[in-house]
Image 1 (tube, helix red, strand yellow):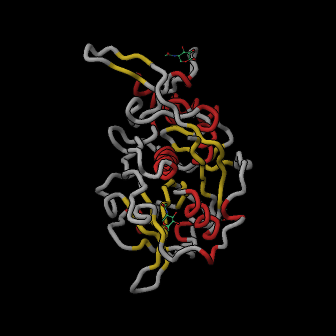
Image 2 (image 1 turned 45 degrees about the horizontal axis):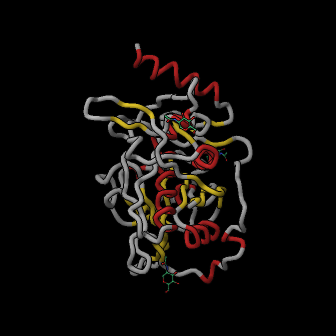
Image 3 (image 1 turned 60 degrees about the horizontal axis):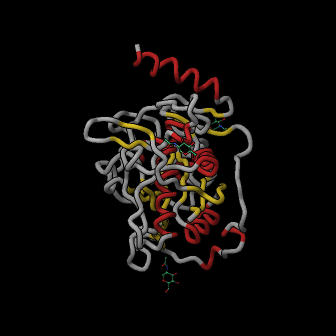
Length: 296
Ligand SMILES: *[C@@H]1O[C@H](CO)[C@@H](O)[C@H](O)[C@H]1NC(C)=O
Ligand SMILES: *[C@@H]1O[C@H](CO)[C@@H](O)[C@H](O)[C@H]1NC(C)=O
Ligand SMILES: *[C@@H]1O[C@H](CO)[C@@H](O)[C@H](O)[C@H]1NC(C)=O
């Protein structure tokens, strides 16, 4: 009965509560039908960085020999869940905390589970939206995976106790668990960028971004290594990934994005991929990407 409730009734309730988002069945990205929210305080990098001044190759996996990124995750374990939007947004933001702290602190991954538990306006296991995830984090903060591990289910915690106070649990050896006020991470501003130049300026100046793509392409689903290429002109997106950099293939001159997926390390290049850049491959460049700035 509980399973029935979770599978059929709660998603229906969730859909009723979030009329502004649309998605196709079986996808984990939900489009905002109105304007995308933003909270922009400082001049975005793309307004003052000349794209021609950016390097040909730039990747936060190695900048001046330092690793500034978090590891690939798996949205399907321990339970299959359409939470790519939560993994990509928290993953890109985790990387930005690593960058902001100059990789001198081992940053624990921010919790996608908190978004599933509390950010029902942003999404659920039935899909969600990256910029709405950042809006939620801006308003409520987010904890890390040490006190809110990924479960791959929607718990719908909002109730008499505000979900802000249910983002972190502490348990003891007697198996007693309770909610505690754990360390919370916030963002000072968030917004969107679109297109190759804006994406590159944002990544270069401030760190990884969350981007939606059309992932139902076999070129993506069956990807093993190399640069993902697909000439089909997809005009909508179904999945969200973190983009951490770009490059140019030395042999072919083909431009590519570097991205981290949430299908585990068995997928692609240990969970990572390269995607043809500059040709709107999988609709990545004609669809807005989301960014957020860590508050230290
Ligand atoms: C990498 O080194 C360059 C040149 O010294 C410096 O300007 C830049 O800030 C460094 N980048 C990072 C992320 O440390
Ligand atoms: C967390 O902090 C809030 C505000 O200070 C307080 O009202 C609440 O009781 C605290 N929750 C827990 C579980 O300690
Ligand atoms: C997307 O492309 C399909 C096939 O070319 C077309 O039928 C559809 O109208 C397009 N949708 C939008 C929103 O442009």
